[in-house]
Image (cartoon, rainbow, N blue to C red):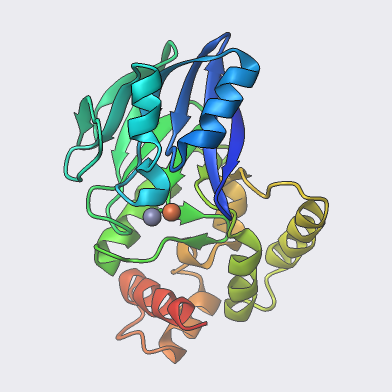
Length: 251
Ligand code: ZN
Ligand code: FE
């Protein structure tokens, strides 16, 4: 299995760097400059790029990286991605640095959004965040809720490599939804300490998200009650998800 580290970009993006010896892949290079600097500093050769969705902060660096190296570019077939060489729909398996990786369709934030599942590690872009989930720019609550269900079905120990450092902000909202959740309270202090020390809160584990992320807890009685207080049309998982997501947008 390849090694995973991060390249910080913009204000709060993480570009994940996958390496096997001197061979490298990156996930969602929104900016080429920090990637080129890291590749050069570490003497790496970029063999591939994984793109989760079309937003500029996830694909903005592809053209420049492609001009310098000749990487394979795996990306959503349904979205407009610069330099895509391997269009994907979800359901495929691809090879990343000798490792078989499953491609998942996770529509919601955008309609073609993909997640990449390696053994024990999920690269999920702007679908699932630490203690939160992406905004529904293109998809419906039904689509996003189903996408989160497919992620939640993965093994508990899966590490969640999302694309943004949003955890602290998301935890404030999660606490408003579930003030009495002890696992959530513990996560708030753990993440507070990490961030105060300048360390990332990502990756988390799926077990941690299931215990503290309100968007994965839409059948929990406390979350259902909060959803109903925020205009959920009924107590179904999707209606509760839609209401909690709507509340988050104005929080
Ligand atoms: Zn996005
Ligand atoms: Fe983003």
